Length: 93
Image 1 (spheres, rainbow, N blue to C red):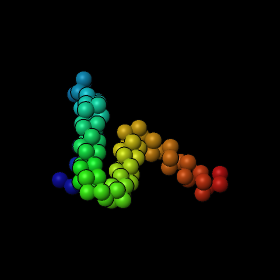
Image 2: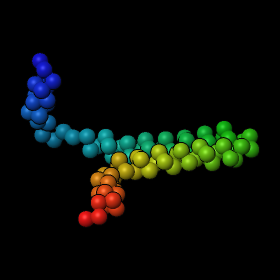
Image 3: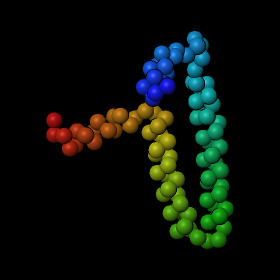
């Protein structure tokens, strides 16, 4: 079976009625994501703040903020709008 056959087969497959990943997605957003953020915050304070390494904590916090921005773009589907805005800056049209 070639790759094209697999693509055609995947396109022909229809999901069963009533089945979706909406519930899992919402559960992750409501429960797992805040738990992960709380864990990262506690680890940052425990590992860096307890030693007085405030500069190290702030460096790591910058990485966390970038990661949160990426997650926010993925969750809200705002990437397309931002891409169009960036293209408009350089496109002139």
